[in-house]
Length: 499
Image 1 (tube, rainbow, N blue to C red):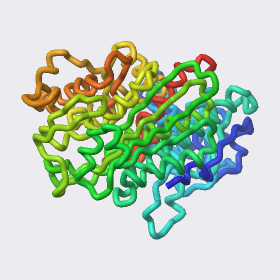
Image 2: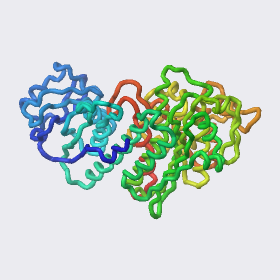
Image 3: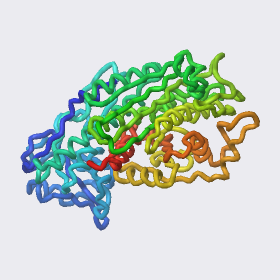
Image 4: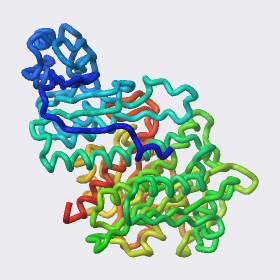
């Protein structure tokens, strides 16, 4: 599970003539311009290959995003030329480059050496996309076939291969990709292997394997949680024979410029508890710990990049199962800090463990707290499978949206209408864990808001985008996506004056 820090994928920069690169595949970009496909940077290709591609449309090539086509490398030292679509030539954004590079390396799984010759100086976007696409999850494959292996060596053609900024961009891309891949690995792991205690051990191993300095991990087990008054984690986890954990992952640089807390939902499997989910689609509920996975690897990435920001991650881990010891609808839990919650639906469990984590995070007086969770099915209804939601304090919500735009992830700002708080009134406790079904994503955010006090805060709901059950696209594979890592890291960098 921890192979990401020992990955065989290497990235280098070269100014060599693309036609003379002795690689298995040379990747070039194709765009849509005036309704026709155009090969970008075609002037760097051999005359006979340019002639072959002169009428790309006749070859069925469109230049649309996610289109990847292989052709014989006529006149090239490379075995094949790979055409990857970037979409409109008028919208050649960094994210379009990331997705095109990622789509190519994803489709080239099983290929040893790949060179990308894109007509851009944006080495950062090309490197990041290529590395994000070079991912495969084969832990449970009895037969490790070569065709499943990610691309082993990546070269990026640039006019300035020794430029310090370009080299730094590649180094950063490698850290980001490792963090995203590590998150994906955890999300893809089977729940019989990744239960709360196992997740805690995986966190320790990932931190150790990273080689990063300034990291410290503390684990609270069942007894420590009970002693600390973490009623949400205890209540949700009590139905499973595998007890809950709260994992604190701290990165403490010398003289930090800011102090940020990250809180992640880590339901290692969500059956719904006594309020059990329908059987159809329940297998995807192994992904209900994607927020905690993203927090873990964001903190590790911050340490690897040596950001001058103190970051503490709180992984709220539990398995939500139905049994004779499970919590019941109408149970009342006492969250850390003393606030009571009436549990009206045991399938609204994520907010219960997150409440404990938020209180613990706020107790340490961070400058800002960000939580990230696969929290509500209502997020999918509102925003679909690829766009996550962000709620919270106006300025922090805006900061998340800005960080997401810079990183290439999609987060949409949503409100927290005060009038929806009335739906969470309980007849017996301080608050109920559900309201009616309308505005469910927003009421979940309002519930969490009760536990942050006056601390600047944002809540990220990644329920749909965290796990791709459909077809692969761009640099995004089927299964765990690693969403949120890049946005959180960009936010931390934004609070790093030295970066």
